[in-house]
Length: 217
Image (tube, rainbow, N blue to C red; front, side, top):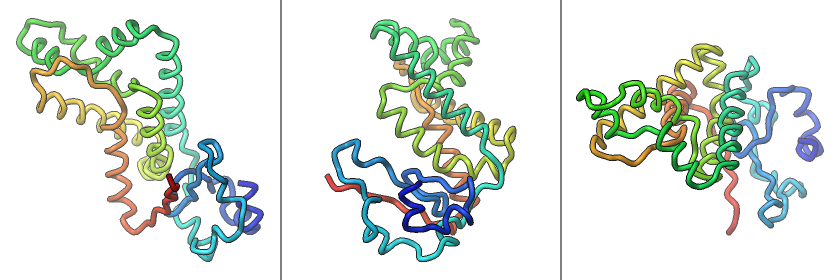
């Protein structure tokens, strides 16, 4: 942010606390990652990098949020904290956690036929949204939730956004079950809920531009 302000001194005044540097933009909320972490030079270090970016601060801050996205922050934090807990478990314990709290279609079918525990089959539709199978799975999901979730929460309001997020997660879980009735492999991740958030963003802000930074290999 400090490096960005060096080349756009007027940014801080016009965007205020709603301006954020991430990997993409909220129409275009700036999106940059700390590239030096993976061995590349930081593109924010030289002014020429900005030659093709929007010429006005208005373009950069086209869609700032009006309210602090507390629910979005809480969802990202909850997913991260639960994943940290997963890392403290042994591989066997992780497998048990995924089997117990992940969505298993076959278990749901057994419950409906009266041969299984209904609560054990239904509860994972919710809990599976907070489990992830590895760092890449978590980071990929949280990246998109962080970028797009705040504007969607701004539209629906805090509680409306939370219920919308959960609804999308439950709907995706039920869809997965419907197409994989005899599958005994647990499904985990927030991808379904976040896909709903992305769909809402597309419908709510169809004219917004997303500035994407593609790193060389």
